[in-house]
Amino acid sequence: MPQRQISYREAVSEAIKEEMARDDRVFLMGEDVGVLGGAFGSTKGIYDVFGGERVLDTPISETAIVGYALGAAMAGMRPIVEIMRVDWMTICMDEIVNQTAKMRYLSGGHPEVALVIRATAEGGIGLGGQHSQSFEAWFAHVPGLKVVMPSTPYDVKGLLKAAIRDPNPVIFLEPGVLYGVSGPVPEEEYVIPLGEAEVKREGKDVTIVAWGTLLPKTLNAAQTLATDGVEVEVVDPRTLRPLDIATIVDSVKKTGKLIVAHEAMKTCGMGAEIVALVQERAFDHLDAPIQRVATPDVIIPVNRSLERLVLPQEETIVETVRSIV
Image 1 (cartoon, one colour):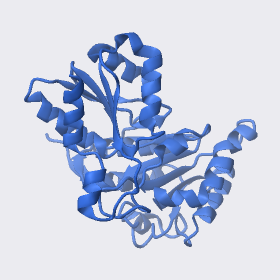
Image 2 (spheres, rainbow, N blue to C red):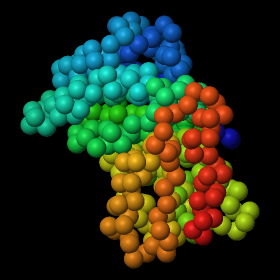
Image 3 (cartoon, rainbow, N blue to C red):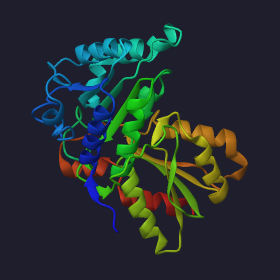
Image 4 (cartoon, rainbow, N blue to C red):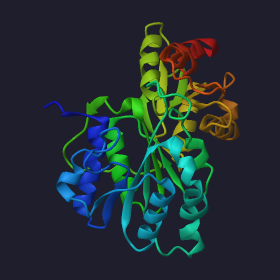
């Protein structure tokens, strides 16, 4: 029997519903997450099941939302916060970085701070410079936070369930351009542990580590390159903190070459951290300089043609592979 196909946004909603049904400490809060079902439709139907006591529409104040959720988490609840765009997490950085990330450590491990902060990230849909950014490296830089960025409907459901059950704060980033993408998701219960990468495609000639919107682009590029006899191994870290560097290093030891692809800005992106770790752990296995595919250090244009020119595309990945193979 073929597996059912559901969209990325449906997988998000399904994960939240299942966890709210499983644990009455879990509740959802954010701007327009209730009756409207979220700005991107990812919480549609949850209010109909659980009502206004467990699905809270909040004022437009990211600072208040995260501060409220932190207090609730310290009191033993398990809030899921939705911030519409990762760009607007800049407004509540004090609550996230200085308070939420440190509270469990400063309290000697108790109480737990089981808090998930979800946000839509990346560009590709013509929303311009203040609505198209990806700040995963910012949060991965902060001890006390876990950072997850799934790229498929299967992964987003399993990882979101794991994030909700985790006793620590989790930043959960969802690439907006992938919300409408469908894929196989089983109906039976499953959870994907945080901190485990997955090899999405086996290959022998070059390793590409990619996440977010760049994962499907990389898989398509790998298919194109296969027609020329170049076999690309694609690794999706899925969780950026903790990072499963062992799976990446094992792949590089097999292929001898590495490219890291992400949509975030190139300078100080997570790609640079992965490059450094591979240099430290697998330098003698490298047969070519490591390459990065990322967005150049420019503000994202709102014009769709210019946006496509700025953001990395499949052809960018193909050209980069050909330059080192």
